[in-house]
Length: 337
Image (cartoon, rainbow, N blue to C red; front, side, top):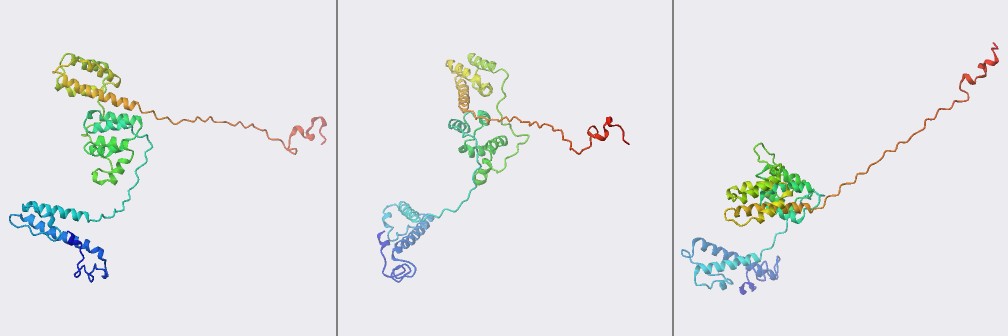
């Protein structure tokens, strides 16, 4: 390809051409780049024509000067691909990147709540991947109770998942505190509506399983089913719901007792499944329990100060009329009329 970078004495790149040293629009240093670009375009056009028709019906044209180094293969098809690869590399190497278009994005709404701990964020990511997603409503419930932010890295996934569940969409947007609408506005590629979807009567609820009145009795029933070797895989969904509904205080006991059950091929698969969701839920509660409580805003009690203003009787003016001090009305002086 060295002959591409040799300045020709005459022609469009010579001293009198547009890119020659005496030209009015360029310099000699620009000539190799112009030649290489034109040669690459011509070579590419010839290769595309041969590739469309096939090397069996149309022979591959001879390479242009400078491209023959990649036409050494004996098979015409392989030689065509080698030459095409060289042209593609040359064209991409000479491409100049376009300037970045100016993009002005509105700032995300400020959220003053504490950041979601890393352990809780990882737990949410596992739930969104399908691992024990039965516990997803409880995760949101604990997040809202703790008063922390949603993991913003998981917000796009949550919004995409909520497109099929309006009840989940309501919960996500409430906990996102305005950032869900902001993200839907600045990233329209997500295909998420800026306004939340309104649940209908047919929308499945997004709530935790109903807690039984006696969680201890439920734990005993679960263990008895395993002890009696009746916990088949068909009963696993019902037992998972039971493990997700009991009082969290009973989870350690359920985990310990399930771990003590001996191996039995009839119930082992179900035992591992129920044990996994119980351990998962117990760890989730432990992670949320490690979040320090948000200090309450101190309430300042102001005791009202009542100022007692004494009542001052008005003084009588010396010249005011008072019968008791009027000498003309003194009964001891008698009547002088």
